[in-house]
Amino acid sequence: MSHNPLPAPELSRIIEMAWEDRTPFEAIETLYGLNESAVIRLMRRELKPGSFRLWRARVSGRTTKHLQLRDPAVSRAYCPTQYKR
Image 1: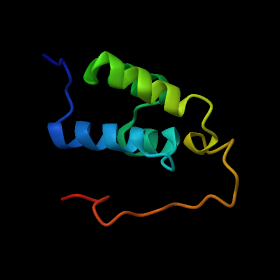
Image 2: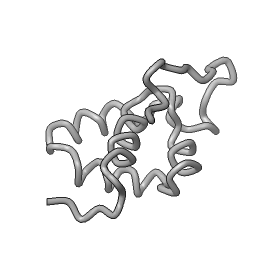
Image 3: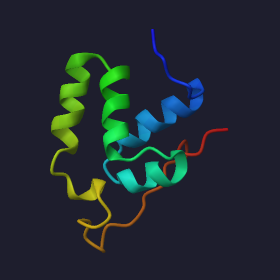
């Protein structure tokens, strides 16, 4: 049982953005007000333990997840299903 005040669609979108390689944590913070540590806590709470470990290994050290570390050549990629309504 989750103790999350976020509506299910927003929670789902935050998790989706956290998994995306090219979506920086700063974008999640801008849209939803959750900084990197809050996203990590949310992911730990919402994912199965094995899924959380896979996600953490994936994003740890990934420069595209941080705007300050990102190569300027990396641009935003848009997916047709990215903006769900």
